Image (cartoon, rainbow, N blue to C red; front, side, top):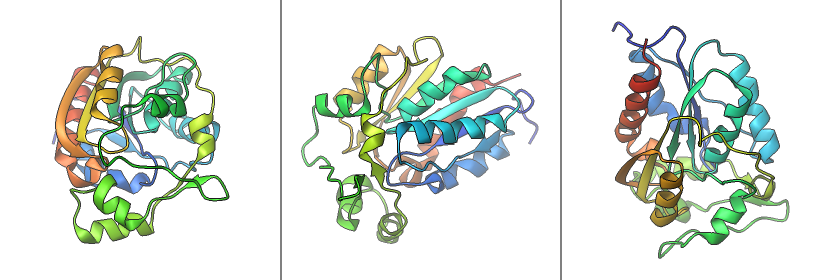
Length: 236
């Protein structure tokens, strides 16, 4: 397939808590088939600063126009990672947390009007938040198959509370074109809060009945949102 995208145009896919970079596996190859380069950094999820540095190292390996895609907590990461690169053309948020000004991720979660049956986060004695297999089944990925729940729970990447409480520099979504996919069945972040964040950044908004793990359970929808933004902002 002949690409309609600019030379070396790259999509950077950033995972959120409990799902590692493998969450994007069903999205990566289709993006490549359309002629886009794709990278999906693995985050340590040990602190906001550590995760931001991991993205920065990945961006240093790219040479061309960029689109940053962030899921959940990583919405705050990509908005701040864009500050350090002149190549970022647009941002795509997948049911993502996007703090404003001096807000932290924890501030957004505390203010959230949580949906019925929402996730209750509990940290272990080391300060990491884990999810049980039953929580993957009923809250994080209710649209997944049984074998997917088991695999996600076994290979999960817990998030440190340090990530949620870290200081957030000024974000870039006020000046960069943004798209926001609202996942109506996300039990980490309510639909109301997703919509408020999408509206205040004046994003192109998509709304679908997706769960938290949409890139795993409904990859075609996530792919379509990313490709639409790519055609608008990464085309030659």
